[in-house]
Length: 562
Image 1: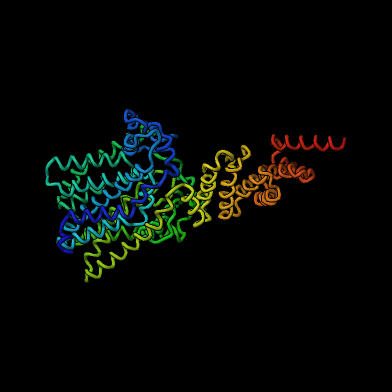
Image 2: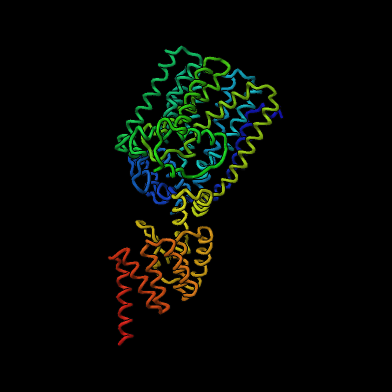
């Protein structure tokens, strides 16, 4: 085995095969969530002729004007669409691209880690190769990357990471000539214009020259300047295209409070870096939470982690054989800066934000392993940890299959996540068997029946709604829709108890009372129908449907009296 591990091609083949076996089934997944705006509805990617517009216009990035500028990713979307050769974007091509970019990132991480282990840690070639291989396999298998690999939207994270690693590899292999240096600068610009999370590489470059190439600090600073200028160029272009620097107003109301509320995020990130559950696709539940004060345990805990990691990095950098660990910690901290709300953004945290920082964490762990005795035992422990991560990733992989699975399973795993639950409701009502007969109002998020279902369609609707109600028994929209389906089929005995339950689940919803009143009318229970419609009008006195039904009911009662 040692003979094969000494061959670069074998290590690369092992990493590539491992990545494909673990994540390859994602190629069979569909588009989910923001993929609709960025790919499915985005007309700018329908022709390669639009690439100049993609590079200069925020409107070309998505079907809706969003505060993001990711031109390299959007241009690559256009290429993938052209490869598909179909009127509609082909999801398998986009998902396969994500898997391949992730595999390329793992391969480049192996190459970079091998160079760093040999030079910064002073490891022997066999030890350096094994450590680099474990770092790359750990990155390929880590469960926190599942969001980036399985979500088409996250192609920017993958591409930016590949360009960052390509730039770093060029710098590590630099021997003083212009060619490698210019290549590194070009890769850096590609990374920055793919996603702003790549910008901190400009600061890491200094430590590459000073620590890896052992150049004087002044010379290292001079060589770093072009990268800083490239970063400034990107920031200026981004601001001009977006018309703003921040994505949104500060999440916590004020800039200072938002930064304070970021400290509790750090312990969560540290847990995720170790691959410890729970994981979730959406941390939006943190928005609107009570603000933290400086002396709260959550803030102090985050502050302690920052000081501890900064102190450790400074202390380790002064020791030649521990510089790889210091470099990993610096990598982790610097690549977390773009997602720290120093420039206000739309989220406190997300697992995809750890895609680049995770590499630094793994480099630091690799450095630690190199300094431990009994390397055989250490290697076995690292292999076991990678296996655990791979199993965890495999379990998380399937939730990205489609929108219904994604949001339903996330909501069931975390009932407090209101946005996941709301998206689960929307995804179910957007199923093909539901769309012809139900409309989910985008403003009120209430359900309306558009037309009576045909017999064949009703059977599929009843199965879907029954299962949805079993999963979410307290969701009034599923209860009401199931009751309406029974009512429209004339099965009032089944319909009325469900519609009555819906009014109890959402007593302040006029539509639920209108649906119940309609069912009572069909049953010819005029007193109960009148009471239900009057309840709807008390909630919404101008509701035309309730007024119409009540007027018809009153005319019917008047005719009976005559």
